[in-house]
Image 1 (cartoon, rainbow, N blue to C red):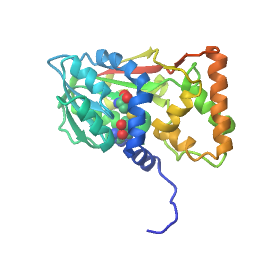
Image 2: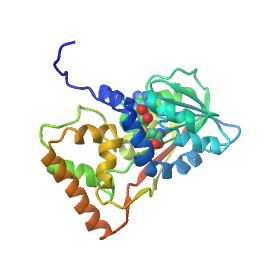
Image 3: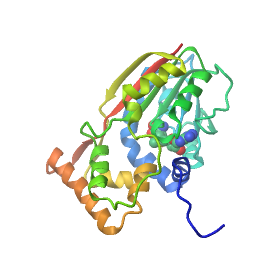
Image 4: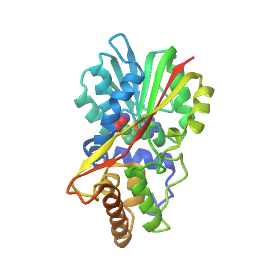
Length: 277
Ligand SMILES: C[S@@+](CC[C@H](N)C(=O)[O-])C[C@H]1O[C@@H](n2cnc3c(N)ncnc32)[C@H](O)[C@@H]1O
């Protein structure tokens, strides 16, 4: 190996970051406090129940799998991060967890009654491929549901952090080309791809998830420590840029949500549901 650094591809960045035990643990214990609030909507959208076998793609630490199992479903979870899978197996010992790539599933056609994807869509380099694979492994009439954070056009911690990076980040720090973080919250992007993959009965709903924090800079810390995309933009910032970004997040939380000492910071999500034709 030479000592030089090749530029990262989006796929390589995602795989490397989620494999890090500290990123996986921080996501699961802190960032996912908001993701956990979306689990009941995903479970309801796929009509999980005792007679259903559900595939939970990008299962991470197993929060959606736990919700599906709690509804009585038989659950298979899939993720490419061994660190995440270790937590998922501990969280839901009754489920089966498989290490694999959501873009190339190791299951026969029509194996499952439902597929969930909790906040996985922005992380895969080829989202249409994941939806095509989800359709392939679903029986006709099977249900699909996936969650994606709303974009910065609504009041969201995501907008506070990425807005602050845009304003105060060092210009040379950028992500490799890849799908947008909120693309699949947008029906104009998601619905044509779902139809092309063989889904109908397309619906979206917004879920009002949030973080309850006692530090107005917490959203910055959560993105820094517990995400692949945010971390890749925030961790390499020179100290003065990092401090300016955090200060801008603090200012936004105070402006929008008052002087504290506790804050409920919104990070709403969109759940998209569909039926396999
Ligand atoms: C933001 S976490 C979501 C975890 C959990 N589903 C939730 O709702 O909180 C994204 C997960 O997707 C996984 N992931 C990203 N790209 C993947 C891929 N191509 N195949 C399988 N898993 C992937 C990551 O390892 C990570 O566990």
